[in-house]
Image (cartoon, rainbow, N blue to C red; front, top):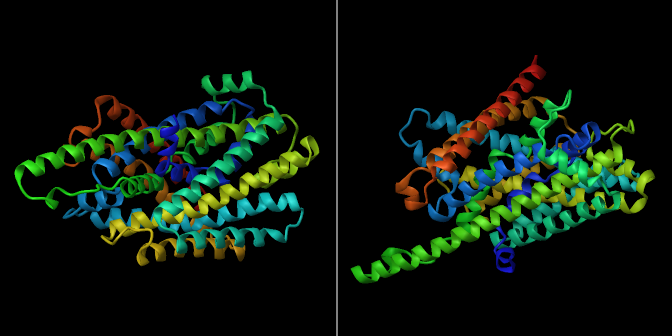
Length: 429
């Protein structure tokens, strides 16, 4: 078990990405409005994320390619190449830039709710952005990974401790986690719960991060002679098998941690606010309203968790965008590279500026929602197709069970995508 925890790495970036202020908010609203009834949706979302992220990690480890690079290679010579590439870049770059503002503001609101000073929202948002920018400017991939491991562990401890202070009903939580029920008015919240966990840009992030973490140490053309090459192939094969085992353990452990944190947040809100008449519109409201019920300890712990959630998403969203865009355009996808840092910092800068100036770029956000709604099922289907290419993955292609699971998730993500597109179109009318 200790060796598995030691290998935790790339998938923790995915956990850091989807446990942001947006996820905290929707889990809070789900618990406050529907008690424990929608906990099963988070279990489904977690299992779906594990299945897709395992495929992305396998692509990076065995294929030694990121999803962005694979997409660009697969579309070479196709009339669909540039339309799809523009869709992907728009959804990732514009979308993550727009959502970055919400992440920063959401985290800052939670912390400001503790201080009681609304004017400090901009200060905390700016502080999170500065820390994230410093990490990009100073850090190699391994440094960024280790930093996010610490942030996720801190965030998890904060929410776990809050859960223990609030003491939800465990039997009701267990029933909600295993019995699929959609209460009246709960469908939209259920879809949002799944949509904040199964995210297209995390597939780009994970495949590239896994490739970076487990790069081949030697190349077959590094030696001469048939016997030497055959021997090196055997060594590379063993390394690949070991790396794949480590990547799978990393995926299961890290995504499970993220799913557990989401369930803890939902159950904390259910125990604290369900039936109380409390109005919960964001995670800051949760921090504020915990005080009269559970005292200062709970609200300070929640504020600390929100700050960590905002910081983690402020790093991972720009990082995912930089990986995907640089790979699709055929550029070097290295966290220390100039192009990579420029893309990541520009995403962070746009979101930070929007948060600090309190801009509400509705058109941009709606465009991002439309693009992501279209992108999610396309990327999920593309990933399943790629994972059946023996020329790329050899014996590590999908099994028939993996394909059934993957196609089921494609259907699920298609319904999510349709819902996101229709929601955006309704707001545009």
